[in-house]
View (cartoon, rainbow, N blue to C red):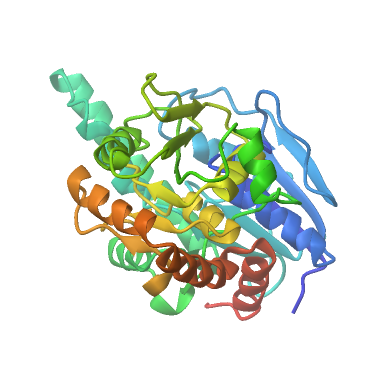
Length: 382
């Protein structure tokens, strides 16, 4: 059943960057609006927000200043958003589920229905972040222990408040069920919503934009973040070096991060959806080799534009990709280069992967994800 009024709680303002943490929430908001709902997005203020999706109302929230930078700050923002939920909202979508309850006043069986999209286990993320800087001294250990206890309590409250939880990875569902004793009937799978630009250029126009000849193979490395190493750009450059002598004129196009000048490589640090999509339209193979946990939206973008995907063995997919992507045997640049060379040498294989990829990418369409969320939320888990 379609909801007539939807409030979305997002991590940030609208952004042109498809890798922005708030991008899935805004993509969903636009999809709910396209399905005929009155949609508002409650979000913290931020620098230089882009235009909101058509039919969506932006509700900026001034971040609380009681604990700036503290682990519990997101929970304070959630509470602030809860105070601004529209009285007639039928569905409230938290993306991500995050920390702390919204505190929306409602009857046990009445609206709004609250759903949370779990992008990561916040407690595990806290542990990973703190493991990189061990506590110094007794006071620091006590502060870390208190922060961890607060994160666990607030994440438990956020998960408990939701009527339904959605995860884009099976491992996440297992982790939250185990850590917080969440009933399995409350958790449903749903892919990440990934928006495409309203129109894609032709291959000729895309190559002209990047000054690429039409008759040379092109490898594209989308960077999930502008930090090249974290985005796996070093791996992409090394794999490219190993195949460059085998293919006349082959180019590597890095998008979203800078790179040192070297033969055959060009870098475009712009981080907007149109640039990412145009580069992928121009490409013959997309290298997704990042070191960031979680699903890489670049997979969906590449597949939707018809660019075959080459990913690492640990890359998470919402379901087995089959022929929709090639998976390297290991993270080693030599293994990646071997598969890359195979793809560049076999146009028929690339066409097969591209065709399967287009079919696989349909599941990431925001309107399809919004439909699944509404369907799953229509029957509360209890």
